[in-house]
Image 1 (cartoon, rainbow, N blue to C red):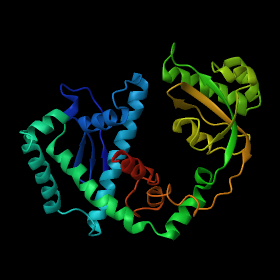
Image 2 (image 1 turned 90 degrees about the vertical axis):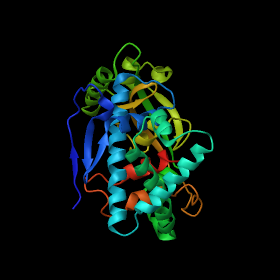
Image 3 (image 1 turned 180 degrees about the vertical axis):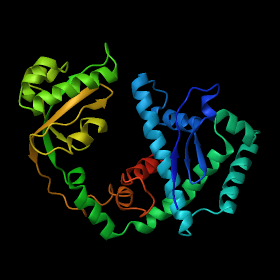
Length: 297
């Protein structure tokens, strides 16, 4: 039986040692979440609102990684204690060759031995599992379910940008939700709302930014929700480094590439879309597996 216990985040003298979640008896500490966020930010300092969202995403990723490891262990595909200890010993030897100890390394990287062992176990088991599952059938199935991401489809989009320089993300989100409701109810057109509210240069053109591809020129945080839209649909508020956006798809140019044409970019996402079966009991798919794989590259 698999279970996840989420605990309330409370102020503490040492918040890094606070247990935030428990997955099958394995604790996830606040410090581990913060280190995942630090690795993703690579030295950047986002606004406090965005940092809180990143912590939430990091917690989700860590929970799902634990669930995947539990699934693989139950099915005889997990890393044994000996496998993990061998890798940790290799780390010890590499550190010793530079006159450093494992304890010094853990202190410098601000992680516990248990956290290191989980990361080592993940690196041992996940790549082989992905390799075994990358069949033509799995790749084609994933392509068919995510055709727009790979077949060269282009969308013509408009957007409304609400800057957060003089505001918080939360208050800009509230404004964006109100504007979105007015647009969807027909009280105002998207173009009119863009001219009235948007701080982007495209405002005078009703928010029109022309055609975009799935991975260019807009950032992923913009493109992903844009490519989930049908023609004339308006997105929920979207947060990027530029601020809070509302996006409308105004035209679609279907792509013509087949799954064989884009075979290389498909893995390991095709595995994340379909499994491992039973690894996630939270009813949210397994996109967290994809994020976990990405974070290890």
